[in-house]
Amino acid sequence: MKLFSILTISALLLLAGCASRNQSVKPRNSFEKLTKLKCTESFLVAKKSYDQHRLLVGLDVSNFFQASSMLETAKEKCKNYEYEDDVIFTLANSYFYIGDFSDSMSNYKELSEKFPNSSLNIGKNTAPELYKFLRKCLHDWHMNTYRKAEVYELHKEYENSRIQYELAKESSCKELKKKAEKKATQSQYIR
Image (cartoon, rainbow, N blue to C red; front, side):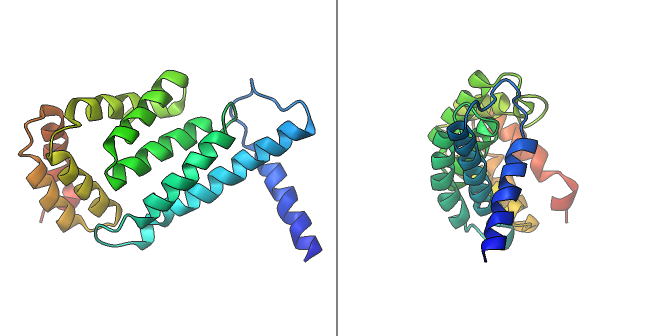
């Protein structure tokens, strides 16, 4: 049992040291190293909960409720450490899937402003893009229909997802309507 504990701690320390992407923040003492380890461990545990969506069906988003709570903790522990941008992005996604669009939007905005050079801000489906989308369509009631479609898609229930995307195409928010139209015509949704 002692050997297992030592190996686990060694693996986490190795992971914390090798996974660093933000070279400008380097721990200077053992307290900072421990804090960094707590950040890494906290994020990985929360991410595991987030990834449980693969085991769920229908509109079950219970994993995202649990993950959002854990990610809030990880966000505090990871301030100024390597995983901070990943934590914020995953937290924003979790809030989206549970239908808390305001918190989702604020986390996407925070990520966009705090980490402009993050890989999560470059390309498609990035934090700035998702922030703008939510800001424009936040109060459209079809946003929840679109969210349901996204949840069904995560659960690989493509027919249910297609139906929800078709309903979301009735949105008065042109950005939401455009996204729903595009998703509804993707190959996995066509009968």
